[in-house]
Length: 93
Image (cartoon, rainbow, N blue to C red):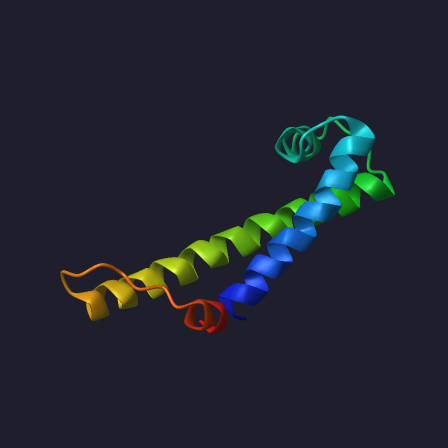
């Protein structure tokens, strides 16, 4: 999975999370805390919401690791100079 694909996944998951947050009037992090504590019912929406949120957390963790590796590579190439971000390289990484 490329960085661009991960970013697209995160945005898609955000769109789904926003729908649920608006519907229930609760941010996903707060919902997830209540859900994991067993304080919420096991409705279809809530099971799906938890799944979307967990997927987003996993994608964000993968993004951070890939970005760390990518930036390390850029720093090695740049030496003491400024980092050069090329849109095509970034999207394909």
